Length: 409
Image 1 (cartoon, rainbow, N blue to C red):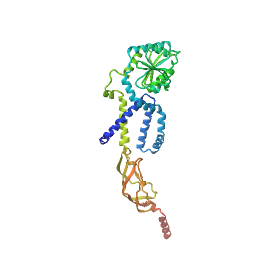
Image 2 (spheres, rainbow, N blue to C red; image 1 turned 135 degrees about the horizontal axis):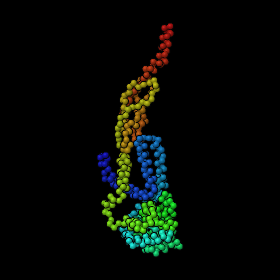
Image 3 (spheres, rainbow, N blue to C red; image 1 turned 180 degrees about the horizontal axis):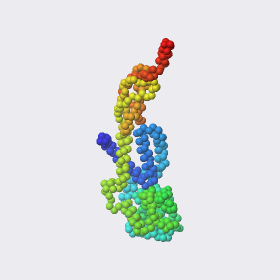
Image 4 (cartoon, rainbow, N blue to C red; image 1 turned 135 degrees about the vertical axis):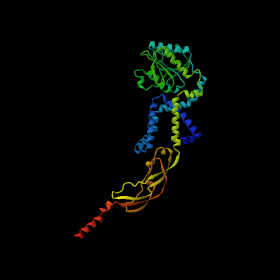
């Protein structure tokens, strides 16, 4: 283990560091989606395949390899939305951070109370409404049919937008800080039927957006007169105005805290479990793909196997009885004990007497992934003879017995 750590070096350390960052971003991207369970299942299948390869289960390995030939197509089909979201997040990451630095996302206590008061009036009057409070993620890619407004957040503005006679009252309103940036927005619908249950389209839209972004969505049901809050792929009913005020203020504090964490504090205090997973995965991948792929040479001493002989024949002498073989292959192929899986079967002739046999490469059976580099010696000597019981019942012996009987008579 110490030698393995020494082999990492500066290049390997940088390789592991960058892979850790990439894996961390992937884990965070998949964390809030149902695809995370699919990804976990695929990782389990991959681990099972590695175990199968190590124990040389040929049939199972062949079935898994046939499955892996179409794995790329399966990945694209299952994770098409997450893959697109991941690459788009990389593209807008630097832009998003610059925007957040220039404009602090904040809202006053009075504005929060005004928003809660308006929502409670909507609930009493059974006026349907869907309000999205933007977090750090850019929502542009998730919106359809939006109308740009960029107006100051106020009670009259919200009531005019969600008036049943208004053209855009069925859509969502986007609030960025203390500004209403868009209205009449169509959001992606969630397919999580367990959480939607008997709720309407507005609730499915609110839940769907929070599954792909860090926004806070507030829904007022015109049928039941209830207020629901959705975030991080979960939705719940909140009819208490004080509790609703607390949720909105807490959301803004998390998006833009008053006192920023220092870089080292942010490194250890946020998403600690995901960081640990990313580090362990990157180290494991390095040992399998980099350290484990390095070609090494190892020697083994294996006994000579003759196989099945006819019942009347036996080997009376063999020299040597063992052959030293030198195998070449990646380190991963040598991780488990492979000596018992190395076999040598020389081609012998079923004739009495001594015979000198050359051992060729095709006489060896070695584990998959390894190559026979050399073996010593190249010749073995075998003494083959018939068993005594077979000799005593042979045709010549029977003929002599008949002659003796005739002579005696």
